[in-house]
Length: 109
Image 1 (cartoon, rainbow, N blue to C red):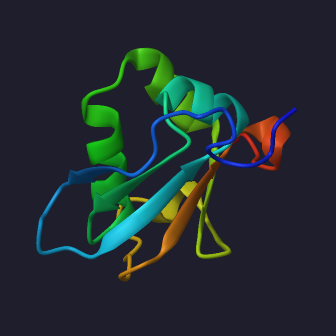
Image 2: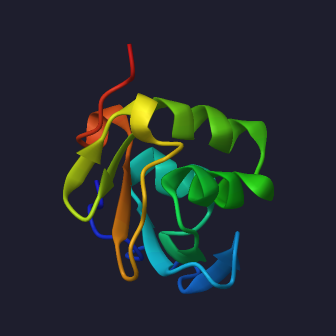
Image 3: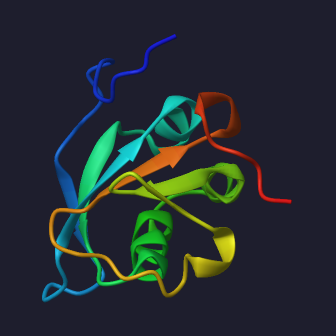
């Protein structure tokens, strides 16, 4: 099992934006989330975690959305509870790790 984003040679460095004035945030997908996203990581400009999630889901299918709902999200080493996702503020150069349950994340109750 791979544990390093980008180890498969998936496209990296893609950039999307909810708001071009918002800070750039690196999103790293692990295990099944990486497979569902089709990339190991991407940069997104968003001021909140909710806006970032809207951007990363916008051009992906329902399978990705389902995987994302089951994942834990960690922002710069700080776990974010599901009820905090929509309003959690992001700062420039934060790193958002998307962790499926078997990769260290936990399925929300």
